[in-house]
Length: 375
Ligand SMILES: CSC[C@@H](O)[C@@H](O)C(=O)COP(=O)(O)O
Image 1 (cartoon, rainbow, N blue to C red):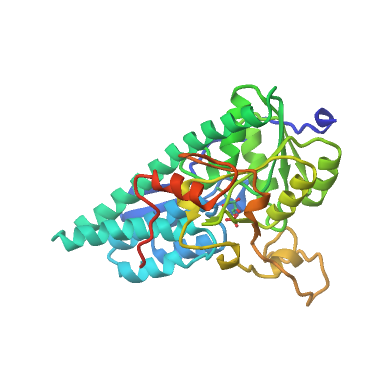
Image 2: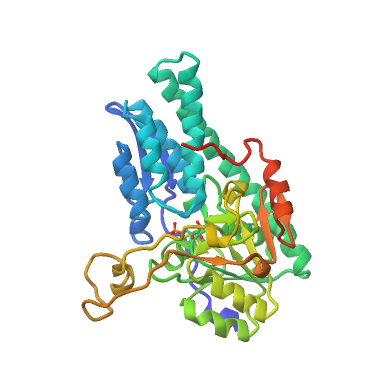
C-alpha cells in the first residue's frame, strides 16, 4: 500500500540554518530562519533586541523545544551585548512560551555564565562574552545530543523491530529546524534512512499550524526520504491497515514521572499505538526532562489564539473556515501519560519501561545537570 502514496522527494533549495549569531558593523544580531514562511520561502528574520526575539518566539518564527533553548541563551547574550537589563531580559525570555522547558533552561544557562563573570569582576562586555560563549556551547551540545539520540534511537528500532524496513509515523516537526543538529525524533528517522532501513516516514500534517506538512515534509524531501503526508485524522485508518511499525515523536517537556508534553495530537497517537500494539517512542534530550515537575498535571499547557483554528492555514490572514464569532479550543500541546510511552530516547541512552528513577539516572549523566537554578 505504502508506495502508491509516495511523495516526490526532490530537493527544495538551499540550506539555511535555523538560527545563527552574526556580528554586523552596527552590532551583533540573532538571525532566524522564519519558519512561518516555509516551505515556500527561506526568509531570514533579523533580531536586534529581546522584544523582537520574544515576538518571533510567540509567533513561532522560531520554535521547537531544543531550538527554543538555544534561542533563549542567544537572546540573553544579545541583551547583554547590547547593554539591555539582563535580569529583566531573562525574565521576559524565559516566559515567552510556557510549555517547552528548554527555553527557560537555555536562558538560565546564559544568565548563570553572565552572573558568574560579572560576580568575579568582569566588565559588562566581558560578562556578555561569557553569556555568548555559553549560548554557543549549548548550541554545540544540542548538535552533539542530536547525533547521540539518533544512534540510540536507531539501536532501539533494531531491537524492537528486527528485520528493518521501518514504517515510522511522526507528528509535528522535530528535525534540524528545531535543533543545532539533525533534531530529535526526525534524527532517528534520518539515521534509519541512511542505513537504508526506512521504508516510509508517515508525516502527520499537524493541525492547526501544519508543522508536519510545512516543515517535516520539507525536511524529509530535502533528505530524500520516502515520506507520505496524511491529515491527522487519517492516522487511525493507517494503524488499522497495519501500516505503522512505530511512532516517533519529540517532546516539549517530560515530567519526572515520564509524562510527555508534546504537540497536540500526540496523545491520541499514543492511544492508537497502544491499541494496535505499536511502540510509541519519545526522543528528547535530557534538557527536555524536567525533574522539578512531578507529573503531567503539573505541566502548563500553552493555549493559543482561536483564529489559528478558525482560519486556515492558521494565520491572521483572514481565510476563515468557520462562521465569524466561532469559539475555538486550541491547546498547543497535550500530555501523554508514561504508561503509554514504550521508551524515551535521550542522548545518554534509553529508558524503557519509563520510570522516574530511570529518567533521573539519565539526567544525572549530563555534564551540566538539569538547570534547576531560578531566575
Ligand atoms: C524536538 S521537537 C519536540 C517538540 O518541540 C515539537 O514536537 C513540538 O511540539 C513543537 O511545537 P511548536 O509549537 O511548533 O513549538
